[in-house]
Length: 594
Image: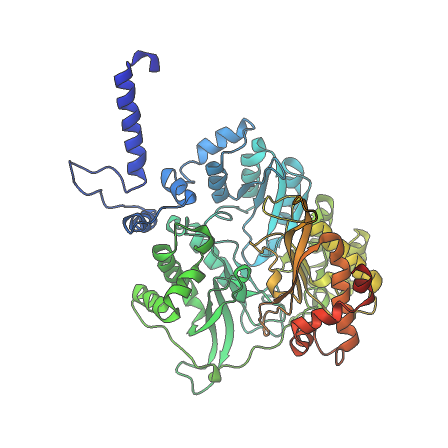
């Protein structure tokens, strides 16, 4: 049709189209000459107003904010579906939009999608677990990954298989909606919820209720950046709520406090370990049934005031840093219309200790005669045939549930005493183990350079090499040690809270600037009752040298600890990170390399 217009008409049409595009990014076309734009309405109004305020204040929206404004990712679904069905790789803006549906285009590392699911509190029925394996075979690479948010991912999904995969999730009662991009991620809760003799509160109803709250409210999608929420019931397995934007911790309030004694939820805010910060206690306590509306208010304050110009500074932590907690919480209370209760820590019973081995091996449940059994996975990866057999074990020997943990493994639950040996034997027959180990039980690794364009190293491959090396050289390691290996600054494996943390780095090996994969190393991190950000001790260590570095640190610890009761974290604090580094460099393996 273009040839039917003359040059002047073409210029007019081009100018009109540009004007419409500009109007969409500044609040819409004015009604009447010089009139104000119409007031935004609908579920996106809160976001449009925040974007408009940014522009009015002289800010420039980042590309992702422009993409959200140009086409709502949910409204664009049918277009994305049609284009994917042709085998077409998405453009950058459409790759971002597909993430609202749980699909991540991971080129150039893999010319395919990765799908991230939603599994509140990380708990699946056996038939759902098996169903995900069937979908991985039909549409993906024939394996699944357990993630550090007690979730599942499926990789190698070709574009034309994207929508059939999502349709298949619905068939088994699951969804991936909102699991990526600038949305509230998978809701985590205590993996031993409801079966733990130590817990104060069962987090399953809270996690499920909050999950349903957010996936059914479109105004809670499209935040300035991703957002994490976790519920800790006070049980024996840590859920790492201190690494979340919002963390709820079940606590027991004593007599003499300003609220009725009993079990309450303590509110902690601002965790983002990759940016070297853990969530801090606000002093606020809530009744469990109030967690949803308070979370909603916290997030809406973030929506209205988060940075929409700089992706590196757009998490809620940076609003808290700029405002301070008192101002932020005052804004939350203004939204709620009432003051929140506060309790002095002196009136709170200290949290009971977690057990770093409790997510591995056999443990008695609070229900007499029943057990949970934790299975170690090789950095979270399970082949589809293994998944289906594990699902059968859960059905035939347990209560039929699979409980994922933030440690990239899972638990069987409801296993009678008489079935424990059978479960262990059947797991071993699959090439897996339920036996607790010094390093593999706490080994965490992100996707790495094989499947993520941001990663500077093959984290999963290197993690397995490190584990094998330590087991061969330090068979005497008799305590749990957490080694977290992450590929980039996003810190999906939360390297700063590990006893030993490694973050991917490009190591320069020639005057010409040639590089090889490697890591920076931190030590002394912690979580749960001992939360702490680790301290850097080495930079730019070649990946091939990482196993000997980890060995040297652990060998120094074993030689100088006061006894098995002194954890690696406690030893590091007592010795000092720099002194530990110097002592490790005196180990024969490192002196020979030097």
